[in-house]
Image 1 (cartoon, helix red, strand yellow):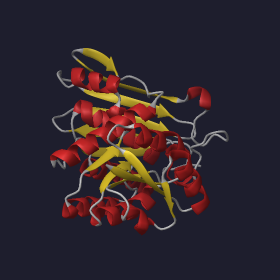
Image 2 (cartoon, one colour; image 1 turned 90 degrees about the vertical axis):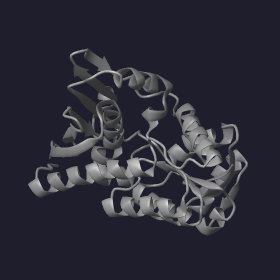
Image 3 (cartoon, helix red, strand yellow; image 1 turned 180 degrees about the vertical axis):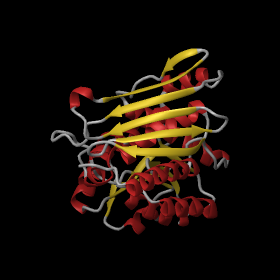
Image 4 (spheres, rainbow, N blue to C red; image 1 turned 30 degrees about the vertical axis):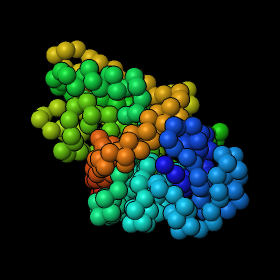
Length: 296
């Protein structure tokens, strides 16, 4: 299955490229980036063809892996789906509810397969944890992710993260895991702390509630995710963030390719789930903006 890679940044070079180049049944055939020189360098690294035009990349591949800012991704992915190309998307699929809905519709119209790379959902240890916790009944849960993407030395200090903060960068991971462990999110209540700190209360189908606190402006010494569910069975903590996201992405790519071969279009982390996560976070963002509680 021939893949094109859209994007040339740090995550594209260190995770997407290596995973696409090392997954059985997957060929990294083409690379496109907004900077043609960067696209050429990434393509040379992985033995692919560089494209200066996204349309020519689409003509050369069966599927596209996206590693570009969310709102660039949603626009390009609509083009890719409309051209019949299958999609490996990054989270969030967009920071616009309307754009996420348009992307989901394009995927449905074209009848292509999609997977969104919520990293932890493709970790073996997290999947084992989810299999255990979903066999029990829980009252609630919580997630705290104090990220340090805006630290001067971080390769994740990018314009879209500086603009959208932890709500959109780390919030998708937390919502994804809490949805999988406690049930679909049917409502959200949001507030803000200093800088980009966001606090969410998630209301899950069937009654459980959970809380989320995220920031990308924390000190590196505090960096990390803590996520647990609790109830009559006690408390169960999710495994931490993987040190090898390439392995997790190989799993995502393998499952996407398997769905394509079998004609199965749905996946627990497909574009429709990605759209739902965007809907929840967009609602939270509106509440914070309307309350005027975001402080700098």
